[in-house]
Length: 365
Image (cartoon, rainbow, N blue to C red; front, side, top):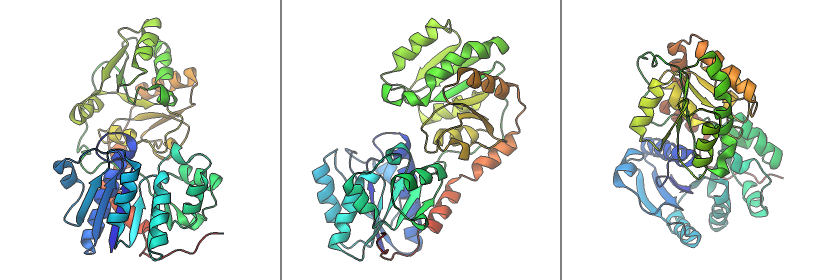
């Protein structure tokens, strides 16, 4: 069994899709190694691959890979080159489906699956994507919300759209025990601070802080992330008199992120369009409760024992939920039990169950 993994990008950036595709690569390689199979990888936007990264997320079953530096023509050529002799393709993004269909037209016995992450599939599909979806063996949806959106915008049969929840990175540690947070209340959030990602709700979180500080005068909001919207958000905090109440930490390393999550009292991301929300798992892995919006796939991640939900864009609701989260006595063991259900071994087994033995599907009507 030879599997070709197509990724828009996998190591160049640290966004949600690349991070989850690293997990897919590792799980596919682990499963292939058990079955004496082979795996091949092509990444569209990566310019190079660090050998350390590649070793961490693969094994001896990975027999070839290629990066295409953003060239779609090179990506297509590489797909045909490395796809020769493959039995199956896993598309890391819906935009790569037409390439998988082209490979299938050359080799009718080839099967392919696609990973459906979030907002990239919460829309109408192009004619080429629709044609390719008709032959997809599985659509691997990261949440039931995304699965419902797929059914809303496509004709994929229910049996082919399966939920494989995202998992915590294999190398992101889950705490054995939880230390108390710092004495003064700290709300921490992590997001790309770009104008295109305004739906993350960081501005509404800032606007909620004056209400939060009425209940907790020494409460602080720590914002981790960077982007072209950072200056506007800093000015918003200043305009609200939050020079001391909002700290913008910019980009931090993975090690520093873990430290910041350990120190916080509550993690909050009142986002509207999260297909899942990996960062909630990273906070839970430190035993910290989470606050998210009642939107997208977030309610499937945050359970009553691990956090709270608020109404997206509703400043009083966000503030009240923050206050409740800071006042509540949380059981860290219950939070850790929740996140262990999203550990890498659980992700790998869910993916294994979702990937039946390769066989060409019947075209949907």
